[in-house]
Image (cartoon, rainbow, N blue to C red; front, side, top):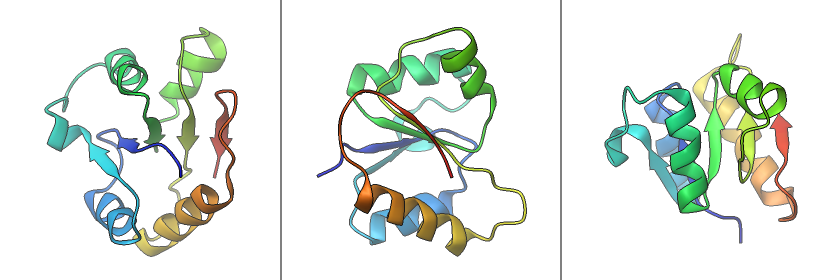
Length: 108
């Protein structure tokens, strides 16, 4: 089973709710009290909890690819032109088919 997801504040709440309804363990910045924390802190928080970080925010790509900050897994979803249901579906499919291994960055 996949590790829990941590949705940063860029992820729409209905997306987090949809993933929860599909059976995934989902933590949100809102529920964790981390709303407004810097991206670096959001990333650190996900690492500390061993959670996959789900985001629409491409700044995280700079942090892990450009600056080499530690991460457990990063799932970046390009939100342009996508509806809530589309995002839930693509993330759900990815999670069902992924294998745990070395930390990776996924572009969906």
